[in-house]
Amino acid sequence: MVLQSLFIYYKYIESSNLFKDADLKENQLQIIRVNQQYRKETTMSLLEVNHIKKVYKTRFGGNEVTALKDVHFSVEEGEFVAIMGESGSGKTTLLNIMAALDVPTHGTVSVDGRDMSKLKDSERTLFRRENLGFIFQDFNLLDNFSLEDNIILPLVLAGKKHDEMKSKMMPIVQSLGIESLIKKYPYEVSGGQKQRVAIARSLITDPRILLADEPTGALDSKASTNLLRQLRDINKKGQTILMVTHSNVAASYADRVMFIKDGEVFHQIYKGDMTRSQMLDKICDSVTVLMRGGDDSEQ
Ligand SMILES: Nc1ncnc2c1ncn2[C@@H]1O[C@H](COP(=O)(O)OP(=O)(O)O)[C@@H](O)[C@H]1O
Ligand SMILES: [Mg+2]
Image: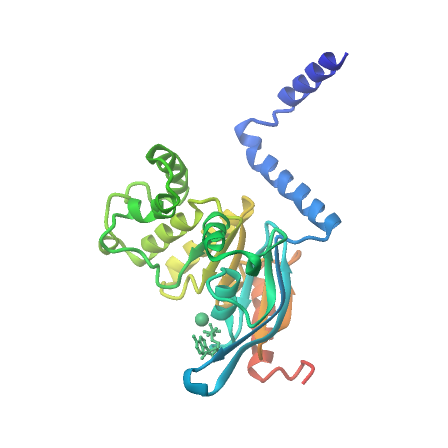
């Protein structure tokens, strides 16, 4: 009886095309939806930033700088969130704390329910490597390494086998359209191509969360548009992305834009059913309010 049920179930799975290529994407999205539902039910988000405060102390008892006063928010799996704010508002500080590259003065950051501050240094390094991907503003590619070696570096550091590295790398470089470039060196390719290499490197470990600090900062507008489209496509396949940017256009690609001001989350915009150009208008309005000093806020 049990065997018969299993057989029928197997046949059902097979006939429902669940594992055919064309349906893989939909299947992946379905898994994400189920995960999101599960997280809602268990009230656990993929990333939880709990009342973060960051005070930088200068040496010899000089001035203290409060970069973040009380930042509190959460991010669900599959979201694409942009973080905006004026220069010096604490965006990079926040990103570094989320990346466990810096520690908060108060508050905690949890990824998948795990409080990163509770991890030992060695565990944190491993956790970061396995769960987080980074795209830096200035690419951070190693000039003496080929693009291929730059891309697989995180896997080399993780001690993976060469075959595994290759099989992980190929689909990523193909989807980013850089497979013909990978034997070249960083100085032989354009800024936009380097940025795609940086994306490939950030994705090679299948990170739960992709963190990007001003990823379009060094690009011209055509390369920026390409990069943003690529980030949006990656997100549509289920990748959670947090992107710091001061560009209204870049932020308009996200599902949610969060504005940081005076060390706190000042305002958030959710894209919902808006088109990108409607989203852009909303962002521009909010930036204007921010630049006026936040007249519409509690102040
Ligand atoms: N390592 C540091 N030591 C002291 N002050 C710092 C340090 N890093 C950043 N700050 C200060 O913290 C504030 C926020 O900086 P940052 O996070 O880089 O802002 P943003 O990325 O939004 O431009 C600024 O006033 C900056 O001068
Ligand atoms: Mg910054």
